[in-house]
Amino acid sequence: MKSGRALLKYSVAAICASTLVGCGSAPVSDTAPETSNTVTTTVPESAPLEQAEVPTAEEGVIAAPTKSVNANKPNTNTAQRQAEALKQQRMAELEAKRMGYHQRWAAEQQRQSVAKQQPSRPIVRPTYVQPRKVSIKPAARPQASNYNEAYADPVGGQGSGNYYAASVSGSFAGQPAVLNLVERLARKGFDRGYLYGVFSQAQYREDVAQIWAKYYAKGGEDSKPKATGGGGGYPSYRGKFLTAGNIAKGRNFWNRYSSHLARAEQQYGVPAEYIVGIMGVETRWGEILGKHRILDALLTSAVAVPHRANFFLSEAENFMMMTRSERMDPLTPKGSYAGAMGYGQFMPSSFQSYAVDFDGDGIRDIWNPVDAIGSIANYFAKHGWRAGESVVVPANVSSNNYYSMPDGFKTKYSLGNLAQNGIVPAQPYRASGKAHLLALSHDGGKAPFIGFNNFYVITRYNHSNYYAMAVHELGNTIKQGVGAIYAQH
Image 1 (cartoon, rainbow, N blue to C red):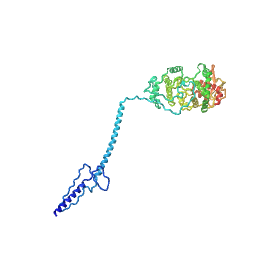
Image 2 (cartoon, rainbow, N blue to C red):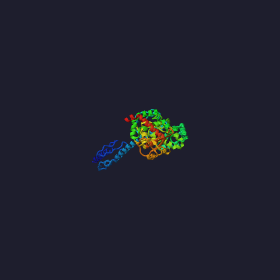
Image 3 (cartoon, rainbow, N blue to C red):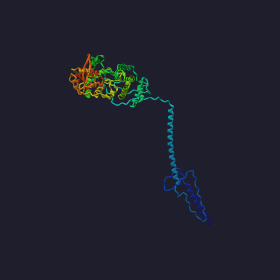
Image 4 (cartoon, rainbow, N blue to C red):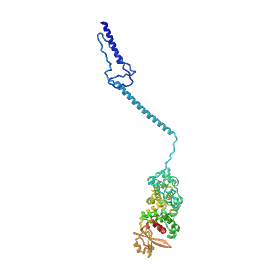
């Protein structure tokens, strides 16, 4: 009986020991176990196995099998380890990005360091180009004789030139009038460096200064000498223009540009003979356009004629505005010693007010005969030309009052008042309003004429009775030879 008890005791102890060892030696895994309904405990390889304490069975007591301590507890250690692993993974990704940023930054710093060690390149100033108001491509235009004498570029210039300087040097260095002009133009959008460059290349012309000195020594008071007949009176003055050669040239010009002349007359109401007459008196239809650079002439005149400096500086300002709007190199256009330009000898201020693009190429170019035709017609129209009215007619005089009456374009009379003084038109006329009594020196006397509104308009071009009468006679003489051809247009 006792031996049976002992045997039972050792058997139970062996079973319990075996059970405890099996519970404590669970499989070791490096990865998280798959999810299942059974809670599995994962133990790292380095973790020591728990040694279960085997209870001692007292004699006569049978010990019940003991379960594992962790059998019924939630597996919190596994979730913490999973979270820690995810955190470590994200930290590794952030560290990789940080290292990428650092590498790129280091590469940029190295590039900049190498660039600083290389020799610096000289700064190249770009070409200064003034804005152009139009974008129309210039069309082909008729070529006029000696047209290129005044302007090498047949379309009036495509740019403003590559000019730049830090200050004005040369002939006009330190001239207060020129520096003042720079400031006036800068306020209108010009770059000072560009203006310094242009004015540094302008030249003081001693020949221009001498012309003005001689002119004012004679008491002249206009921007250019007034048209007078010298000692021979009007016939002497008239003879300078109404020559056989000039009349032939005028007719050739009329025949060549007859369609443009007809269009100008239709558009502006100014007869072709007066446009042709102006061109003939001013430039012989483009043969005498002037040899002086406009900018040189204007700046020289401003310095050489101090009491007219404001006038010439204003013209220089208008000239620079013209070169910008019409894309001209300011050191290229040429004209008279007073700064008059083109076929019609416009001053720059007149260009700004009256020049037109009559050939439709997008540029107002009065060195171009077509644009000049339209511009002269527009000038007359803007000054009050009355289409269809007479200009001037000879007068019959039946009273000695004529010799004592004030005459000229500055004095106006009613036709009734002239008639009361024995002065009446000698030819039919068509005109309205006041009239001007004209007494032109002729053969030791005074030839009487009556001028109307349109005669006064011609004197707006040049303030001279002789000038207006010469334009009238030259234009009408030329017309007589081209009348049949002109009528076809």
